[in-house]
Length: 419
Image (tube, rainbow, N blue to C red; front, side, top):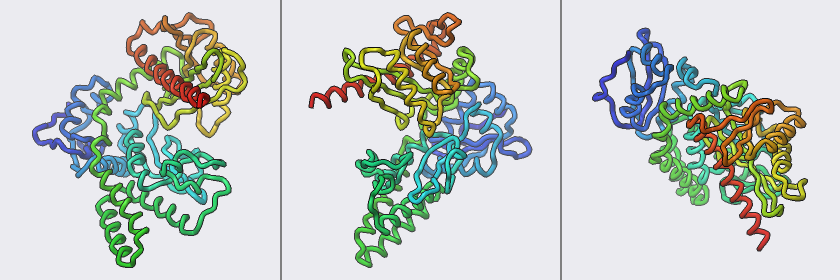
């Protein structure tokens, strides 16, 4: 097995490469602390990681000034070398990509499947979606862009928060040539950021700012100053590469997804899990919620809220069926690999019916509390979660997140009615 002299490793951000005796790159990773991350490999019980350590002959590393540069460098090197273990260690999941759509005002999305979009440009691959979303969140306040799936009549929430220009996604909006130019400039800057050359980009921005100030174009100079400050925030951000995102944790998540696949007879690993719950007050203010987990991680951007429209009285199973039918009409959202509904056998039956009426083949399970039974097949007895602690903890987390979200949405609806 590979041996490493950890005394020679820096406790700084950077990128590391496992290589074999022929100097071929086997695996590329990033770390906020190179020494700590590489030590974790030798603590892992993962068969695949042990196999990597057996095949590897040496480890090379490249220090970076900050975590952001490590993130971008990892993506660049994966694209250059396409290491076999970067694919192998992801099981059935896929890389993340940043896409710019092909339209007058291109939208920006993060996706595993860029081929499903009409794209103008694709940047990636990226190994970690959490860091990708964090970077966009940091820069978006100062470099607005559009991420609306389609045009709409009213101004969107992102535009009201200053995260989007507004005219780029609102039907009938009026915009000037200057508006178009500002939007295009923002997209160019975002593309340059993800190229990873933040130092040259900052120098260029400083030069442009000085020229604009000399020409007394103060509004344009201020816009570039905000962009410059966004880059500074990105460079000093200390949580892009999360310590919890080690292979020990990632391997644990994969073990649980494999258990889900095997226990509930799924066709593939449940990369995307959606959880449905409903809430009401004596049959009034009826609402439903949909929360989504990708690779076992909650994705708040995929939260969906529903006002119950067709059910007139307190009837949880039929309300769940309505939420599912309406959700499954949205093909543009993509479809889950597994759906979890809150409830027992009756809720399970209505969920199955809703999926069947939508002409789709999606696996559904139902969690019945407080006994913690999971219904997954009408011809079999429910599975009791107490038989498997890891599976129990994971499914209860899914259910709890949906329950918290639906209660919050229901309270908000009730308060709105009072006002």
